Length: 280
Ligand code: AMP
Image 1 (cartoon, protein in one colour):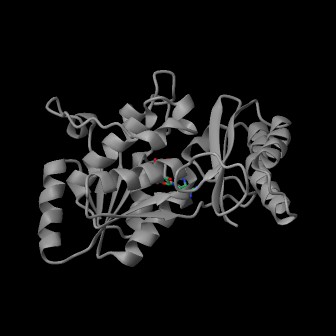
Image 2: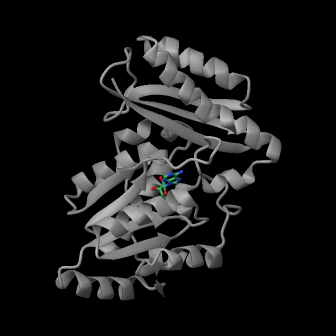
Image 3: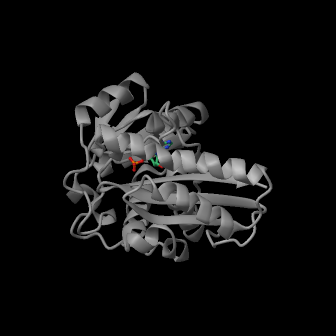
């Protein structure tokens, strides 16, 4: 595994590999890696000759009162984990390398960003779309891998790829969970042991939703209220509970077709998200 900091150097190396028909798989991350990230790395290894993982805590996707400064960072540990996975390149650029003074590629994420997480986190998805486009331009991947955990983000990236006609296949991979059901997240380290136990209610509420659907519930509002009711007992604040069409992210009235049940809630000061995709 080579650690590369310079965008120019990485592009030069990868262009050379691409010209000898090597398929490039890319996994963008913000580091503080866990098994969720590694599942994407393993998927990329299966489908490509060359695997590139980036670690960059992207300032443009954090709001002014969010956790950019205290976001967990442990580059050494991450690099050791990735070396074990035998990836080819770990791209770890500086802020000025990603956003040089001459950079003018700021993007708007589009209408998929106007709902769910986009409401409480204005500008967040613009920052995500901007950095991922910049990283795609540097890495020139054939395949890119994103987690269903951040489903809205993955859809926004897919629409960005369409918008720019980029020759990149965007894969959305399943959520990797801890043994107690909690979706793995770099932010779980913020939780105290007591909060960590309460956080289980999020994945439990999604399991509960699945059971209710199987018992024949059809009205989305009724299901949403039942999820809310359960979460209320454990969360400090519910940001949203949404039942939406899995392509448009627009709220549905009835539980049919491909739907996404998505939850965002605070345990203490930590905002956690989780979701469930169901085909009915
Ligand atoms: P992050 O480092 O949080 O920006 O995440 C990098 C990538 O890993 C994103 O595509 C996330 O959706 C994905 N990811 C984060 N947590 C998980 C998880 N528990 N299971 C699968 N993928 C995940």
